[in-house]
Length: 227
Image 1 (cartoon, one colour):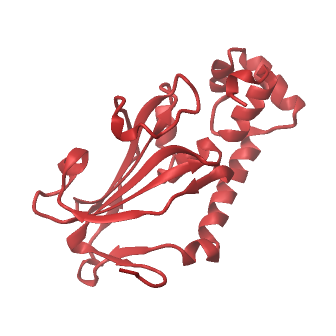
Image 2: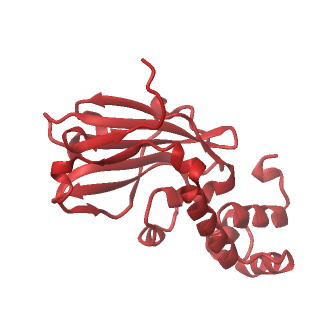
């Protein structure tokens, strides 16, 4: 059932459960009602945004710590000779990008959402080492201040309903800097690029990309490599 086919009460509950980080005023704006009405509906349904936020954080923590999840992870680390260098993670940034045939398979959750690029850069001794980005549709009026309190781009995926998120296999390639990320890396260095599709249930709602500076990176894969 589409969002606009739900009653206002159902929409309020749906928005609260799928994105507990929304403010009361944000939910009211989405639904076309007043903050007071939103509070009344949430109270009647015994829904606390604070409790939902805590539950989301706990679910994310347990998911990342589970042995099953870790056994499937490829391990990325610095080569031994670079381990003593200072690795720092920058702020999460966001910018609106125009519609593109490159992302035609990504679906909107709401009709007025716009295509966004959310990205974060890690530096090694002050030089870009890793660029992590997510291309997805988001509310044009997303609270920019909220981004400052997030540790990872993954935290933003919780706005889509963390329990229903799935990921397709990573496609890994070695290439020269090109496209939008060329500005972050030196021209002559090899880049290890990893790309996968993010699904909400079975709907593709985003593309996640990670670019790593190849000459300082070591990757370990679980299981067998088949050529």
